[in-house]
Image 1 (cartoon, rainbow, N blue to C red):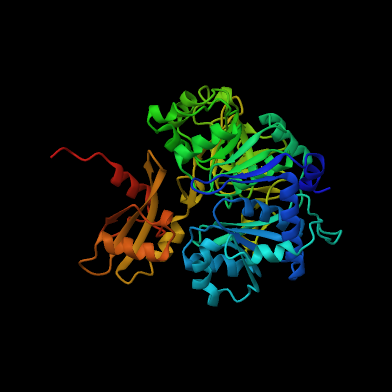
Image 2 (cartoon, rainbow, N blue to C red):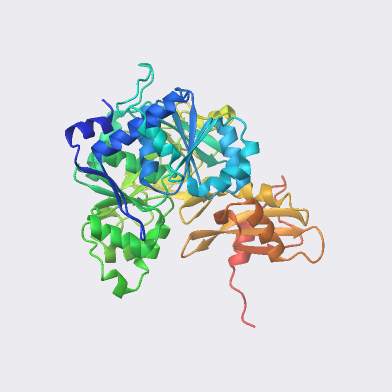
Length: 510
């Protein structure tokens, strides 16, 4: 039986979703109510022609209707394609069209985005706006509240998704995850971390990200209450933790840095003792940030995991190991097999030797949509990689030594330099461009661009204005350095490490 249907039958009155936004009425749905709404949406999707091959792109800030849609798409047997609402029109149009989505489920607050790209998404047949003029809600009210009838050959137990993650070519690619699932692997992770049926999960970060969305799914599979924060605000986050006695969340480092950096008198207003299982992920957490968290929250509540959209959760660092193993991302998660291979393709078997990290498990993704060659390039037999370089110590704890192909992680967001370089390279005022990440205490890393101007008089503001026009805000460089030429290897590859070192080198005193 579908997990949501089972919980609706066993505990119909238990709160399933709380959507509590400052200045708005609180939406609180029981499991029975969420089941009804999800079934009505799923039946509506089936009525407009949705099948197991249909890609449904959903877009919006965290909300109860987004949670309902995640369940409904699964129940309808379709493929869910989360769309980052922060993308520019060009970026959004590419993802929607490349995914072959024929249905859009969009928060009415983003109707202007849909209008701006309507002529560039010809495969879309239906646009469903929620929280708008009420037309969709009226249509759903006419649908049956019973689970939809889906072909028996289509499994709806775990759902299928296609999450777009940028590649080194600069074009996003869809990581497809099929319905295959190893219950023992999932239950092993749940048992290791110690989740219970009484947990209360808070969405720290947007649900279109694989981490917050997947852990929200785990929470509902266990029958937990899920509290959705519509838009992150550090003090409001503390309010939600206290008000609903939140016990678990999944978060990137930046939100927690913002919470822990609040003045002591503000933090003192809120009870944080309920937090029992915080999953640290999305980017490496510095030892200093971990100490900040441990000073403000229960010391045994922090867990760190290493993983990716493609490979799922691969390693786990227990609470007692954060200070004992600084810099480590932990040991292999239950059901996960990890191997490292050096540049010559030999397996790394000795501690402290680096190699590219490969994973074998039942949780890895199925393919890169329309990019089979990239999928094959990331496999070695039945092991898969996202290109991270790692090593392990004498106790079997893993450490990530380098980022996947120069990827930048800023505020928990994956930013790929090649994508930004491709955009800036089209600027008529620039001759050549290189982009890399530079350390930042607040965001982890920020985007920096080195440019060779094509004419005299080009300014930093010219470069940034062009970037803002063509890129989502978090991808826009925070700094620009003008150079006469970019340093390169003999083969023509830009020496980004040299650029970073020169930028960060101490300047002599005047």
